[in-house]
Length: 370
Ligand SMILES: [Zn+2]
Image 1 (tube, rainbow, N blue to C red):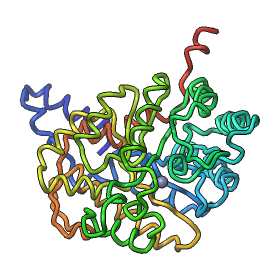
Image 2: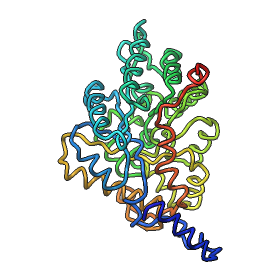
Image 3: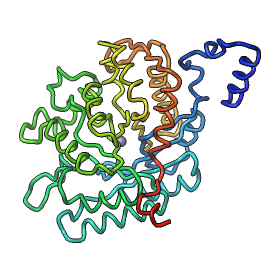
Image 4: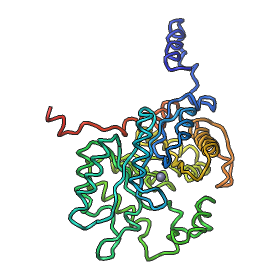
């Protein structure tokens, strides 16, 4: 049913003297509404030109924000940019992208200029955000062998340019909290498997590396340092294990938002303990949270496989957030009841917030010039 039809139907009810017409509308969506409701996945990675991702997004009613990342397992950032620009040209209404910059040359006189020029060019090519990844804080080192932290003043010229360009910064700092816990204390099997297979990334085994709170502290100082920056904390700002902590972060930083990418099971674990509390969190921060999956389409899966995976992933999250369906979530070995968030909250989390954030906004300097 189109929005216009709903409006017309409501008007007819009212015209017929139905003062209780609003009550005829269910407060939450159903599973059947999934494909019909306008949605935006604010964190995916399209690392191939194959059209299957966009075809599934169209079938399921999504726009996509594909995020380029300076990540060694992905194609180079130049190749990611080429893919993004091409897909955007073909589907400018459905496909959006965020650019990335390299940390190579950090500390040299040309680094900031190179990074800012790259970002400005990407914005000219249509990028609507910039991504900074967890290599800052965990991998990249300065000339003295010290890890480069996000609140390093060396980032200031790049951030100033991002602010001037009128686009947000998507920041992924740290890891899931589980990364600092022993395997048997992790809250889900996915993380347990991943860190069992990748002990080099399992920070519990590397006490010489920065602690979780050290990374969160650097991130918080960074956000405070740049109050004019439109900040998006990727992966629930790495505070996925506690809606209270994420609430405190959002309260402390009024210009910050958070995406939900790849952290839904951590929310579902909290939901099992106190569903009402998690539900209240989503309602209270309905203007600050953006639905996102972290789905990554690379040439190593077939189009049919990927489309099936994407559809099932999106539908599972929809059932959890939008409906009161109960479903089995294998990685936490539990049946989880849906939150049945109000339609107005779902519309914001699934569309309005991302479409508000991921556009280039006129900056103060530009509006003064006119
Ligand atoms: Zn990602």
